[in-house]
Image (cartoon, rainbow, N blue to C red; front, side, top):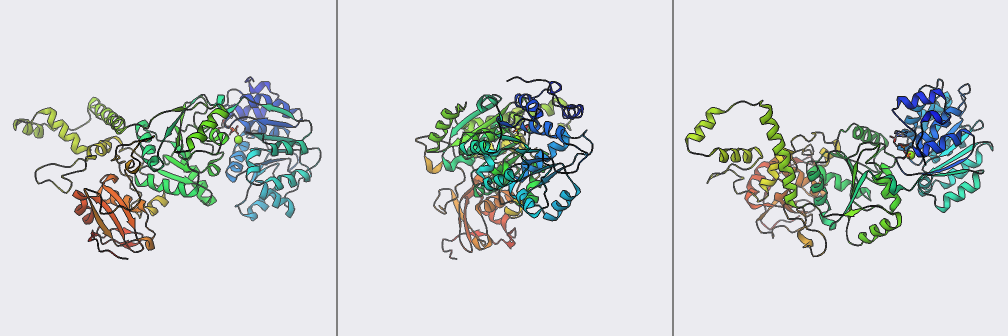
Length: 594
Ligand code: ADP
Ligand code: MG
């Protein structure tokens, strides 16, 4: 199907002006096909992938059909979620910018009835909402549909998935016979076809080519990763590519919370979105994300559905989506509008089979790769640091230190060694003399993590409030990200027990080179492993990798830290507040009881 100029589609001059104002140059294939058909008055069933421009495809002709001399509801748009209702209402408002007297109103569950009564009372020709709440208003008499000209079901498949079938049927049965009916759906399962058959009259079926070919701009890769190493894999990929704007999909709310906490504790600016987040909070999170107020949104499918954010650098499928459709929906958020994007998918164990059947079934183009090695991560970090150093040298905007340099040269040090030592210090490396400080005999990873001190210092210092709270008030230590310790391995034959630098389960006191520290807070204070790691990393500014096993008891916590840092950690943690409790840490004696 071709693309065409909007001006060839039969739209009003006001509509064309709005489209131009929005910066759309040409109509997308689905718009090219749908707009003239809707203008003729015929019912339409439209099928195309996420990001193909369906909203404008139905909204433009719908707006043109509204008679602004009447305030009665003339167009009803049904959508599965509140986010979508709000987004589509916003897009309608933009597309109707030059149409005087047109009002649109989003109506969705969770918002106060009072406000909606007032809105409906004031009169809106286009009402956009979720089926449940619209149904409510119909039954209460606050939504009158006797002048209705058009009903649009957007994301119909998802609405059925979400259990809106009854409400949709009631609404469709209650509207005037003469209405025009538009169905949009990424997929056409049986249930949708039934609805169409029952309520549509001789609809035009418009389908735009399959999703897989629609996302050629997205570089798609999957990684076989042991379940417990996912976080390590994720942070490595983020670091190697230096991603700063992306969505990470998880399958459950709990997973979202855990991952978000964990990433925050590791110094990434993240926030999360899932079904348990209040509407107000959601709007805030989404608004902030659109403004790039943080780097990564950790979300479930439903919560992020329809979230209209362009220019994502990457979409991570931290958990495998349920099916190819969800996969395509998820990755459709990157690589939009001609920009290239990336989609990284993790599979562990049997999920590999599921992914392979998806690939076969939906003809997805996903290639396999290995998680970058520590060396590759280091190299990437080194490059960033190198660039910064070189830029500084080229710019020449630094104070000369001739006196100190001369002193060192006079004492016989080589200039190359002086530079290396400085870089070492700059990256947070320990000062080393025979009697060095608390960090003298540092963990082997210290150079690596230190490299990042230079490389990552530009990360946004903008942790969400919940992260600060969860991490016990460290303000979600937006410290430099830490290097992983253990060498990463994945795939068959990997030593599954030690692939991840951070292991939540108890192994306190037994690990060589670790010392167990007693903390006077535990489950009763709602302390989580992320709290402990975040706290320690935050106050000591040492890599999270010095923290080993964490064993949280009812009233106390045992945490392993690298032995050579144990006293330093005890000293730094003393008096720090965690979950409202002032810490009195000590080196554990092995006699601890709850
Ligand atoms: P869909 O509903 O098919 O998933 P949307 O209607 O949400 O897609 O559109 C995706 C993005 O593309 C939106 O940001 C929208 O503003 C933009 N868009 C829509 N039509 C065009 C067009 N003709 N040219 C450029 N961008 C467009
Ligand atoms: Mg849409």
